[in-house]
Amino acid sequence: MTDSLNIAIVGAGIGGLSAALALGARGMNVTVFESAETPREAGAGLSIPPNALILLKRTSLCDKIEKITTRSQGLTRRTSRGELVLPGSPTVLSYQIHRVEFLEMLLGEVKGPVRFGHRCAAVEDTPTGVRLIFANGAVCDVDVVIGADGIHSVVQRQIGLAAHPTSEGIVAYRGLVPSQKLSWGAELRGLNMWMGEGRSFICFPVSQGRLINIVAFVPSMRDMEETWYAPGDVRALAAEYEGWDSPVQDLISALDQTFRWGIYDRPPLPYWSRGHVTLLGDAAHPMVPHFGQGAGQAIEDGFALAVLLERARRDEIPARLNAYQELRLGRTSRVQAASRLAGRFYRSAGSDRAEQAQRSQAWMSAAEWIFPHDAEKAALAIL
Ligand SMILES: Cc1cc2nc3c(=O)[nH]c(=O)nc-3n(C[C@H](O)[C@H](O)[C@H](O)COP(=O)(O)OP(=O)(O)OC[C@H]3O[C@@H](n4cnc5c(N)ncnc54)[C@H](O)[C@@H]3O)c2cc1C
Image 1 (cartoon, protein in one colour):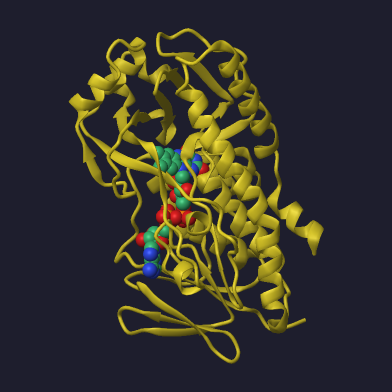
Image 2: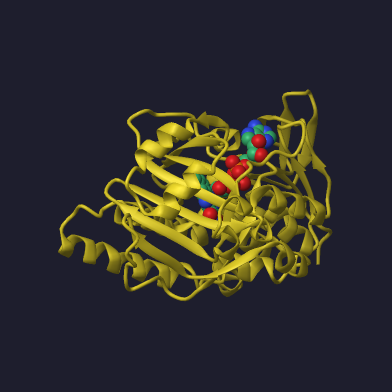
């Protein structure tokens, strides 16, 4: 037995806070450092896939998550004209949630301190561990640093990596519509997708059905910052979906505002861990969102890491962080690739039938290995 490890997490997004929850539950002392002055998340919905749900439901969040989410069994896919696409997706349970409500729930549940207004500027090795230096002059010495600081990760650069995000050539328009604005809004259930040539459109209820989240993927040659906050033009969005099935047009007409988000990923990194420092979530493996797995994989990372660091001696830390990298890099790289393929499938209505059938089959097979995974069990198996 050893005294508890002191762990610093850089970034209080979904990845960082889920990791804090998992590490704290296994007895480690965790401090989260976030550059923003106050909690920050987008007014948008998030689908929590079954592979993340299985982990969250083992924690103290279990009852709360049941109360504030809506559910779906698989994904209903339609063509742009509204015809059902068969076969549907495997019948897997996922929960839908408002991102702000999810972040607040995580913040309320993590045991250690969350220090806002702390922008990490540098990470340095020390004789016994690692030192974080912040832009506000603060310094913190710990046993382990976890970079959960998103796609533009500073921690990633501090461990010698310099990876650049790659645009998928599309942007996502996102928005929330009060369900009472639509005659059929209160009846909407589950995850719904319309697929067309070069475009796809998704909607699902959040906030116990009071709001409908929409995500509309359209081609764009314009590279943009990966930000939640670039405002979009509702009329330009409506023009992109002219002639599509009526629920798509109803939803766009009911939008008061929308914002655009560039869709990026990055080729897998050669490594994630160096000495006492590692990465998770978008800092390690940003992925395009077409399998709804960005947050899902970040949550898997944190829970796997917690299993591997529990009861580790200080001299075992580098080996444990390498084991984490070995365990997770392969799976997240496969999910990254499957997510790109899924996007092409959703937007390939104009391609020939054989090609579409092949893409549909690849999508079904990926769903079968992505969703049932248990990241804690996989980590326990390599200890
Ligand atoms: C259109 C779209 C839809 C999506 N839908 C889904 C979905 O339905 N399901 C799903 O699972 N995923 C989805 N995703 C992906 C998911 O949103 C991301 O993968 C996930 O939020 C990444 O979490 P993270 O904590 O790793 O990074 P982030 O959310 O980027 O958090 C990083 C945090 O680090 C902070 N930070 C940055 N630099 C520093 C620094 N130097 N010092 C201190 N703090 C710092 C930031 O302020 C931020 O709070 C979607 C993505 C897109 C684009």
